[in-house]
Image 1 (cartoon, rainbow, N blue to C red):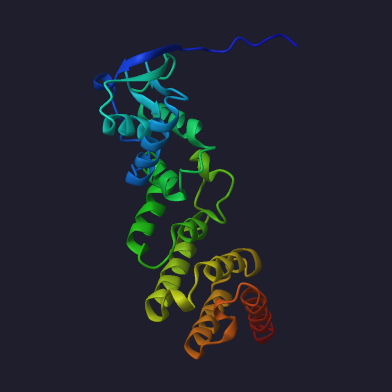
Image 2: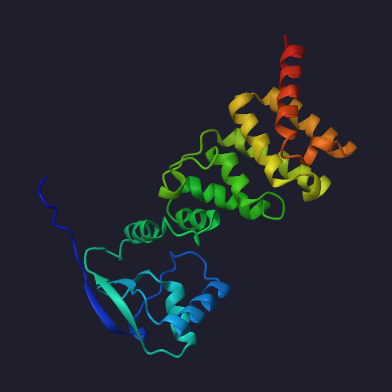
Length: 248
């Protein structure tokens, strides 16, 4: 097999921090994460450089830069690449995402917010989450629209399958949260409800409406299965079978 020639950048161990251009496309900055990096820098020094474009646009290392500023540093070790066009926002974002896909510090919300700036489906889901964030978890909002965090989600290419059904489901689940609170309407059980609605009920609105009524009865009466990791889904599937029997 012929050896592939890969692109390589240049290393500057003393790049001026003042010349760096932080990207608004990056995930939200977290003070705790910045402080953690500061502690590591004091203990171990610079173990890896940040990654920037030839014009100083930051591709990876935003928190480390903030940590360096906290420590009153004037320079920072930087790996400089010249093949990413950071003037094109989508190309810049794709590079940031690519460098961080294996980074557990990036949350589902970080990916959702980043892609919402360039993808209309992600914007719809992002707006839906911000409107319901007091009730439904970001993971479950993503589940409602993108069906179980499908493999395309972190690539920014997930597609909403059924907008009308997703909005209907989210609205009703959010109402249950409002009425009965998160102790009874738990994130785990909501995730299972979404899964059953898509994969077992096959988005049959009549079936889902029936299941929602049963879910509310469980919450009202304090049914033991309402927040049970073990019992909730099996009981939900029993209710689905009951609905199908009644519909015949």
